[in-house]
Length: 116
Image (cartoon, rainbow, N blue to C red):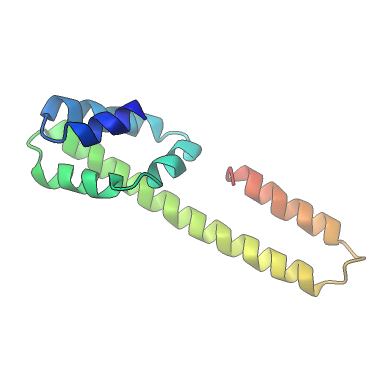
């Protein structure tokens, strides 16, 4: 939260923006952090603005890398959501007395694997 606040409150301070981009990039090694950052209003636009306006090559590279990670994460989540919905629809079609519990465990396992 402190990093995000600094990023938004000091958009014209190159050293703050650089430090924030570096810190955000380091937090993106954990998928749950990526999902949290993706939910921050205005962060994508702020990173895009950083890419367009900063003269700091490190901040620009970090911002570009973060956006790429966000895009990949969003794509993974979309794929996962489709898998889960498809699995649930298959479970609903099957006779509930035959292997429904096993299918449900597979769906739950997949969701846990992706931190959903």
